[in-house]
Image: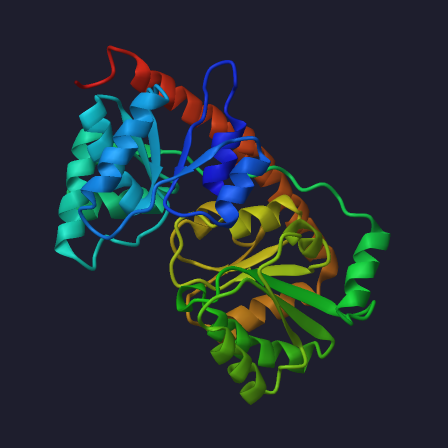
Length: 354
């Protein structure tokens, strides 16, 4: 989770992180495992003034100098708290949600853009947000998400995992990581998989994630006759290990900000086949680190996957180039350095607008 990674990685000599969440759960556990106390302030719908009051109290009690919020609710409510407490706010936007569906949300974000520093995670998202809010792109800070390179996994461990899943030594393994929601495009991948299996019969697909579509996707796999080749693994905490046994990572999304799943697969040295949407073309270099295909196009998706499966040397070159690209342009350290520089600029008395 990018929020956890930022808060836990700040230079302790320059910053102290205070975490506030809307509810307890796995994210709270993750923060506390990293030694960060997570304060839970439940929020109840729109205009929850009790939440505003309690958050202001937390800010003052902990002597918070700057708020870093994420996505619509955090950015809008956080801006109000920041103004009441007379401190700056950084608001990161990770995707296109909450812009086009309701005018009141666009109005709220226009307010946020005037009172706080908005950050976007891709050039595509910057263009979209600027157009939606009718503001200049220069008002939006661009900071790409970043990840650490994945340490190599021993062959013995990879063999154990393949054996546990009933995957043979000569089987090809494809993988997708993401919530089981329509926007991730699983239905198109399943359609493509039927074609892939005809050309490469010994192919398996790992579906990692959970969500509302799980039952429908299992039914689709059965109807397509690919249920033996598709393994639904649910939510996992060993994704780097699972990535190590993949031949190709696939993400046929209909929309993306900047995909952490793609970044993590590239960091693990895997070639990627992804849809040409959102920030994906800023990650995947078509023909160098993987392939980009039109969204909702199972035929093109299948063609590119088959091409890589039949050219393993090329697939390995793509994976190595993907890993190098992450190290050069999308490192975790680079992301943290940019956020810390932004914090310090905003904390400067000259920069902050009272």
